[in-house]
Length: 406
Image (cartoon, rainbow, N blue to C red):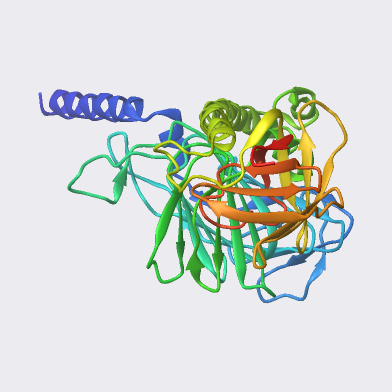
């Protein structure tokens, strides 16, 4: 009789254990493990391994790094790291990227205790691609802390317990040590938060938004053009529309990660397109009528345009005060010289008899009027009161016509 009871009790324990295991989602089971290692998946040209307490040495494919190790890339070089939780990190040229220890562990049924994976970008550029099932990733630079959560708290009472993330996330981080500046680009929607190292100010980004942290101060959130970003930034290969063949060239595990990431990058593209349509409708009407709607209140402009010819496109500010406007209709780009400090603009080499550039609400604008009263006006959407950042593509428009007061 006693043996039967012991056997029966053991059977119940086995059944209970199996039921408990069945509660775990695949993402939860994956997240139970330590994030212990990454493999050098790909490398281009000069890539060094900075192994903990060892001298630097050249990296090779399939080399393994563990917590407290780092990689350093040379000029025109790149390293891709594939982690054991299926995260993919792409490290661009002239960058130093360090891997810190992190843990994602089971806590309660279908819940996870938040203990973030920490990556440190000491200089340069890194693209962080986190698959579904992640709890939290933190990227630190000397200027900032970037938290990539994309999760919902399980209870209002316990902020340390989270549901496993069902969505992937993609964030690009650039740190310029000489300029004490970190720039963060969100490629997906979700809970992506950026703060200074002291945590005094925190902002959240949606896909297609960027923010800079300069000299320890978090700036304003700005929109950048995701479509142009995927066309011009090679580090984002495989994430943009029409890039399925690039994904197919990767190994099966990396393909799985990229396909999950693409679901969210393409969704962010669609969401930004809807935002841009709102910007364009409002801003073009405002530019032509001399007033703005409730979204971007400002005083009426002094120069109005008769018979306007409007072309939409992408504005990119280069180093210094030069910039380029690339029309959507594939006509020739327009070169600009913009000095926001002096409030002046030159468009295609023409300064005219009057020229002016400035910020208005969420947007920036500049105009040149020649001696015959012809006007050329550039509008840049979504800069949120700051001069457009260097190298960031923004949606905009180029309008030509006649100044109404001529």
